[in-house]
Image 1 (cartoon, rainbow, N blue to C red):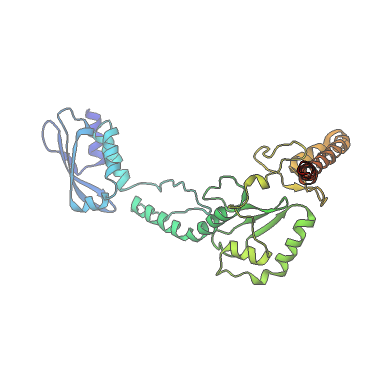
Image 2: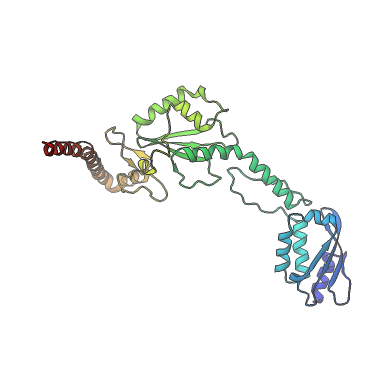
Length: 322
């Protein structure tokens, strides 16, 4: 007990016991370069969690918004010395606090030894406001298009892979500081599908208007309408890989497409790479044969459902109606 009292006196020389039982302490605590009046009344068992804290109106103003934190520190402090150190950290942190945010840009705070959590909170709100335009742009894309990747974008995600149809997609990387400017664009899909889009992008780039939304600019420049969420399902754009017969593979989705206009089968890049290396290309040749077989079966299935079955049903109805 004597050691704790000595530490308390050294750390807070202007904060002294007011009675022999040492249940009442009163004095001053320094914060932000000033001294503020403080009085703490402890119960007979000296449990800080049941103490009463009385302070000047100036100190109350500084602690405004931190009442819950102060109460929490009182509940978990083992003694008065521990609580006073916690209170000092709230009022007068010695080092810049670590801040963890889900922002697309670094969040650097301006900090001085006289700083406070209120100052950090104000800087956080200012950073939020500066990123509002970016999040509005990304939210519109998420709400009005079919985003293939990422499946569950975080607020820090700056990239979107958007379905275009015909097993093609566009990957965009948006600048959080200038969200309505032309983003980095990469088309994914068969050449006969994506090359015309690349030509349109180069030809119409002068039409890009930063006053319009990014999504509207993409429509105007590419001369397309993105597949609508209200009409199509995501399954319409999520074909399995022609090699592993899976859509998701280690968190990636197919990003390579067969260039044959009659096929358009997508593949994972890693699947193509692996089968090409196996057995000096022999497995790759076998996989290509399997792929052609897969594409042929897919074509035949489509042919049967769209041509053969309707023809047979029509013939059957004509037969029974005679």
